[in-house]
Length: 255
Length: 258
Image (tube, rainbow over all chains, first blue to last red; front, side, top):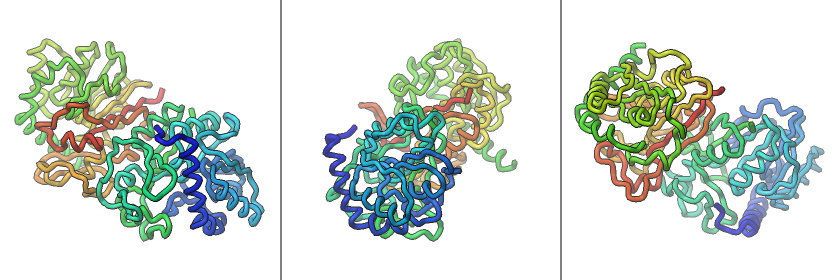
């Protein structure tokens, strides 16, 4: 489905996340690493899907500064963070030194993960591979990495939010469909590096089931009452996300 | 309980009227169609692949069969069909078609919410704009699960969530691009001036409900009109132009756990 050659696309995504790390994720990592609870998405929704993390082998696909992996490490899981952006992994290593919390970090794209088959109990991605990697390939990789009975949890922008995202840079989404759903998954934005992948729910279900996953849930997340729009990831306004899901969290089990 | 009785009666009244206006007159043509077609853009099953490949010999229950043309298409292919519908007028039309065509199968007058048929006796439960849109999903999905054998399939077509979100309250107006109502806690809606009550769930709600009733999710087919499709003439809530961009209809395929 990819329109850019893989190498160019991934290099462009790495360039974008190098910039984003300089602008935001590096300075925000201290707070994110020290969070007591596992939170999902731009509205910080408390986790209710992971269950007991103790003793789990966890792979985070597109870990960025690895704050989710850090949460798992603190709670007795054995996380491995995968990300293609060296700058974000450098931030993650800085936080590892500051906190004394050590776990493996691997510089790789989720399309091609240099780790052995059937070696994880949980694969997760929060705005990582779930949005920035070629779905045909990262979902196959997640399936390969998981043991039978292992789970895949990933969060990405909701299909509906994508359909309502204007082309104009820095304009938040509105209450209006502005792009077709029957369209290529790969989306690039003017003035913004990298490519995002946006699938319909039907396409996600086809891709997940054909890679040996059972669909356990699609959690269409609602911003909590009183939520405020995110200061940096402002594209989904809190008021919108009170009425429509800005983010989809998929929960699956490898057969 | 009063509420349940009222919604079923309301939908029987709605469909008695619709049968007078449209479905009785269109039954002959629908029954005679050689193919299996899905939805208002008449998309051939060969293009969708929602049904089991081999239909011969399957025990099929159609929940909200209306004039039973879909059941007739399956019966012609050797399925053993039972059509269930709460509207006597539509079942009368179905019986007339059976006499005309000689193609006979069982018809039962009942709503999708409470089906007077035995447990674990069907291989396929089907609904095409039947129970899927007009019965309470929190009642008809458990009924479908009860009626199916282990490993049996549930296949149903209904309006896509985007239609629910963008349809004006005026039932004569067409879907647009504005999101007119929230998506959280979707359940049912009565369009302005309509007698009947429709039920709509978001995808996450469907998945949760199906899983809770022992189904595995196999597919969600979001339908797109074929090249050369024409605007629907009676169910004209949507145009080809709109449906080329966004799914107006969706088919869920789920399998009862073995």
